[in-house]
Image 1 (cartoon, rainbow, N blue to C red):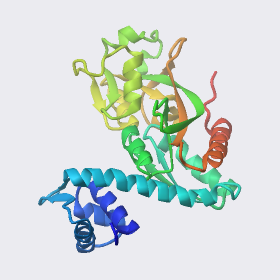
Image 2: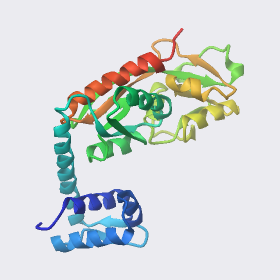
Image 3: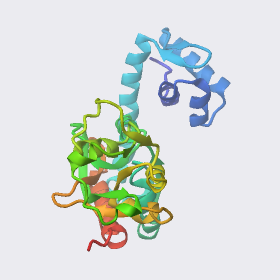
Length: 303
C-alpha cells in the first residue's frame, strides 16, 4: 500500500460510483486519460486488477469490491477528521453538502437557501436533489453531509432529527369539488396517479390506500408532482400531493384540492446524518433553524 494516496482513493470511489471513466472524470474535474492513468497507477501499486474495462461501463473485480469498501471507510474517516475541527468553532460554517428529496426540494429549499444566507453567512450550502435511496447511499459513503427526507429511515448508522409533519392532500378534477372525499378503499378503484418507483412519497401513498407495491400495475405514473397535477387537470384521474406542494403545483392547473377526514394521512420530514459525524450539535442547531423557517414562512395555513 506504500504510495497509495487519498487522491487515488477519491478517484477510484468516483469511478465505482459512476461506472464509467468519462462520467467519473467529469465528476472529479479532470480529463478521462488522467483518471485512467491514476487508476492504472493504483492497480500497479496494489499489484491487483480493480476494474474490468468495457467500452461503455466498468465492473469492479472481487478485489475491487473489497478495496472499495475499505477505501470508502477511509474517505469517510478523513472527511470527519476535517469536520472535527469545525465542531468546536460555534455555528456551522464552510461547505455543507445537503441532499433533498424531490417532493420537498422545490417547495422548501429556496427559502432555506435564502434564510441561511442571511442567518449563517459563513455557511456554504451545496444542495443536491435526488430520490431517497440515492441520497442515503451518498450520505453513508460520505458524498453528502446531511439529507432532508421523509422519516423514519430505520438505519442504525444514521441519526434522525424530525423537522415537521405534513398532511397529504387530494387533488382531483374541479367538477368533483362537492363530492365526498373518497376513502382509501375507494381510491383503490379509481384512476390514481402516483410518482414512479423510487420516490418515497409513492410508497407512502400506496400504504395509505392499502395497495401492495408489488401488486398489479394498474396505476398511472408520473415523474414529478407537477406532472401528476397536470394529468389531473387533463382529466386523467386524481392524485395525492404533500401539502407544501399545493400552492405552487395547483397555481396554473384546473383542479380542486380537498383534505382527507381524520385520521388524515401525513408524513414526517426530517434531517438525517451519519452518527459518526462530529458536527452533530451544529446539525441539530441547523435542524432547529430549518424547523423555525418552515413554521414562519412555509407552513400552510390550515382552516
